[in-house]
Length: 88
Image (cartoon, rainbow, N blue to C red; front, side):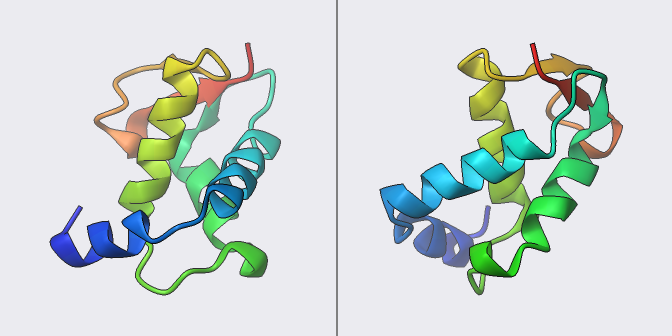
């Protein structure tokens, strides 16, 4: 993330982070789905739009959800376009 993107990210409320995580999870399925698709669908939600919030942020939230066991990753999360996730 760029320093400007980090400033935007740091200013997000806990409530908005919860809504973003819920949206990311809502786009996941029991079968594998591309991380880039989940990120795109979430970013298109107008209620979650924050100017300056990048796709990198959303990918990091996916990684956090995987770390918490809420999603299962197939592939390397460092390569968002080639990685898939699913609900456990």
